[in-house]
Image (cartoon, rainbow, N blue to C red; front, side):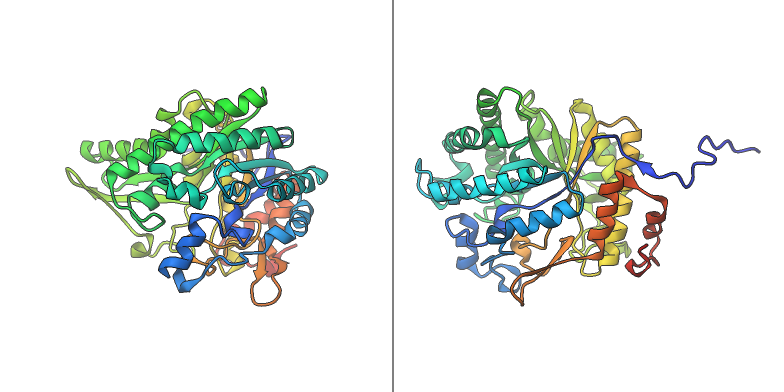
Length: 430
């Protein structure tokens, strides 16, 4: 029997991305800036002593003072896009009062990126809230979208001409689930009703923010960064399991879009998780921890499943909007694993583009090591290592050089595919 190979002779061709594809990195304010003592996370860190290893964000990565140095590293890597967030609590420490020094600081941050010809993707809400906002009920309050809209209006007027992409809200599903359903993040509630209320308020806030930004900047690009699960069932052939998989896909991956239809110019995809459903009963879904099956995982135990980013992209393609990978990264002390992760996941993004998905950019999470919320400083996500014990020195890891090659060559040259094998090492870097 003859096997036809339509790609014969192209095994070593480089995987080239479309011209103009935006390679970049991502950070968030509270995780890297340091000194955000007017927000609810800072208060939570000081209060409950629940953070892993009792880590508190403190100076974080001292990015507030070193942003020019960090952007210089990003530029050397060939980065053309940087996703960052603005800290609401710095700018509006009191309701309706905007801090001039904080506004000036972020002008300097954006100007530093623009001088390096790095496009700016600005996130307006990345998990943290001003203390006054929390004291007034936070995202449980019906007034929450109103307070957020006031802040967004100020941001659009202040920075509108400098911002290339606006992300109104980062991972609304994760924020609502961890704070109001699982109860592991502030305000530590455990209620399905609280979760649904918060999701609805976040959707209302997004819709208002979308209209405000477009009123200020007609051709603005506005979207959200959405945590998208790749999902599979071990009993997919059973109708009950298929329906449960479909339900989970809708609740986690699509519910927010059903509440905010027509208010997205693009979709940001954050991909970290592949969910395996072992079995599902009438009212239950049992998932598998990747460690049970000895699958490759990150230092946080999250399964490393490159095909999942392809699946996440194809899942979001149905909205017929431009797609950007706004976060994709791995917690790994061993940098060889990060190199494998990068090449394997970017290869799957390439396959999605070949399958006609309109993916226009990729941001690795994270440019630098950061404060990983309730996990503290132990997980290392950065292409650039931060030496927390010695003056916060920046040290680009070998993976930064691998990513730099991908950025500068606009794709993966065949010799980098060696990192797909577990025996590969950064010592073999050309």
